[in-house]
Length: 106
Image (cartoon, rainbow, N blue to C red):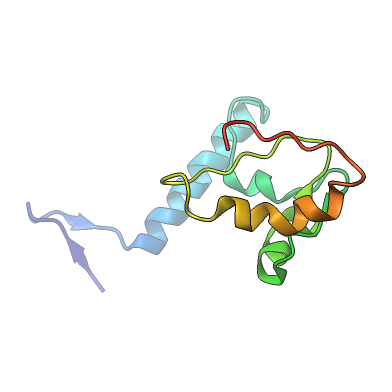
């Protein structure tokens, strides 16, 4: 399939552009010795213990299989009050009698 811009220039297919961008980012990361570039794939690392979320599908997606213990976790939402406390409820119930829980601007 050929992609064409409105001005008549040929545009490379999305897969080709993605490979090119990934190669450029990899080179940038190598040149900066990995210190100046953060890549989203770095999220998939689990360090330390976790608590099950209470939702099998969510736990399967999170590094370590649940919410991390002993760290701060930030939920980024488009708007507040869309069920975030319900989402955290099972995990908070599992640890509330053993550990302190701090909620900042819930």
